[in-house]
Length: 104
Image (cartoon, rainbow, N blue to C red; front, side, top):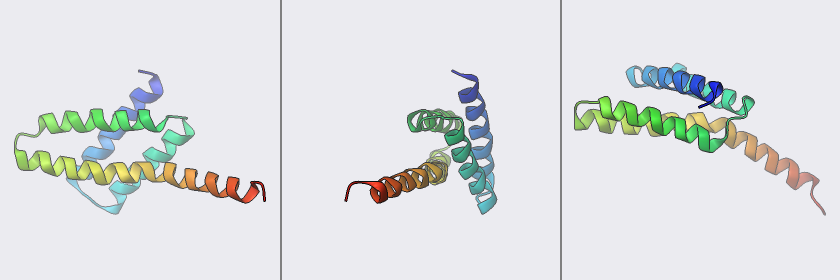
């Protein structure tokens, strides 16, 4: 694992654990910033999703009860959506630019 991915995994875990303990806009903005940084560090979406899955699985394994595991899984989905939002906006912007500059 590269240094950038190792750092991303640590940051992702820290931010996600923070989101699990208090689900507010501040914690979701951390997820969004992780997504922005991943783009600027040229981390691919597949790598980002692999980090998400690894962190989520670690936390699911550590959850002692079924209802806690369900809570982690639901939170993981919401957190991932926010992490991927910058990539979605980047892709939409790219598609709009190519559509506007394409052949007439």
